[in-house]
Figure 1 (cartoon, rainbow, N blue to C red):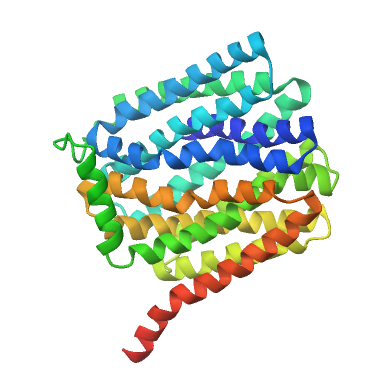
Figure 2 (cartoon, rainbow, N blue to C red):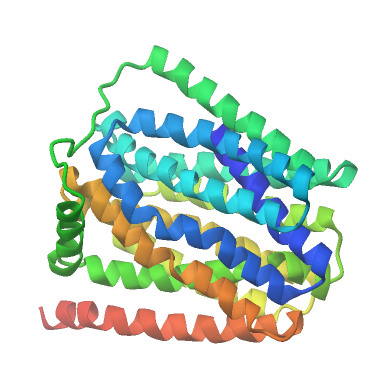
Length: 384
């Protein structure tokens, strides 16, 4: 997981930076972010069905080897034809297989750690993920400073191969049964009907989806504008951009470790993390300089990671195990549609100076939405 996520961070790091540096346009940078993330989001329901139907380990292999091949073929295409679209295309196509790997891992984790507290399992998983985010920007920025984006993509391809080798070694040492949860269903229609039925009728699921979508909107705008804000509005270097990502990831690890070690109820984890994302978004929106912006950025990333613990734990408790992949895939589609939407909203801004106002408006809308979604629960507790 660490090695594959490290490679993925290389690609996520290089796309917005290369687009902004080449075009000097925050609008094109935002649209590139939308193009990069939209395929990942749209493919979640299909990947969810596949994760239930086929062996998760085999899907992980396809994900990792496939991404390495896409990097190689994309670089060959760039060398033959040129053009900025190749780096965006590589990241977008790799994003499809990243989604498949993510869904396979979501089905695997409850099977591997069946007897562990799921909040703790998710905390450790998120910590590993954020550790890769610490190392990714540092290494990618170092490579980018002495070479070009093609070198970054080559190293990403090598890391994807290393991820596959690491998983093969792990599997030799760990023989825990990992099976498909719904391999008897050959239909493509029934799984989606089941997933949408759970979405409508399982209690509490619609509220959690709405909260997550609103948090992802702030998170998406923050990521889509970070390169332009640092290198454009605050006139800092690529190294400062890497530092921003690293500080955010380190703070996230600290928050996740505290959440995993704490005895907070899952509801309190949700409340604290939701509030933290809002506060961080407001700080990034009003920050007059790079350093205060870094504080807000770190708070958004840190508490977004904590919110992921909340959302995944709640999903695991609500959704039946045999339908977990297909239902989670559809849920993540709705949750994450706000991220490419964030890129489109950034693309509509006239200049980088206007992004602070956009983030502030989104924070206010999210706060009001969270309050409205929580009122029925608060009222029920009061009357109960």
